[in-house]
Image: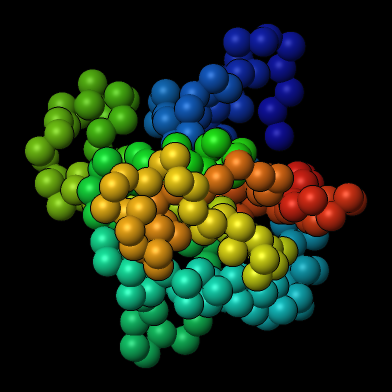
Length: 221
């Protein structure tokens, strides 16, 4: 633990413990080289105690992943996550799909955004953030395979407390975000856009819980 009465030091130290992200940095943007020191001793002790519930928690996340897989598998232009043969278990930290191209991903994100459902590119190749470009001289083209994947992969809302109806809602199409070809493809329309609505999930596996009024999910930290 570090205690200081200097605001500039405090902000820098917070950034260093959180992988180098500053307060105003965008998602997965790093202003400096940092560390992953975000768990204090009390939190570690609590998580250790919670390990007994890990099987149940992982099972819930796996069920949500299966709902996504059932609805998205076989759709042209969409590749879903695969669990390799011989794998013992998968934690399902995120649920990431690979779309046809960057334009396809942009339309999906815009459709989600229209109704307040978060999504994120997952994610910018590690050599392309400004810090690495300026300090180490990396450029687009340095790792073309990683860059190609970074242009088309998208993490969908994902949490162990999501219900099957939440997954259906995320994948509900919106006519305004589909192109002419997509409008004629009923099944494929699931992943080309979504209409407005009430679902509001916290993103990327952070803690969530059902809202009191039953209208989706609310934040809980």
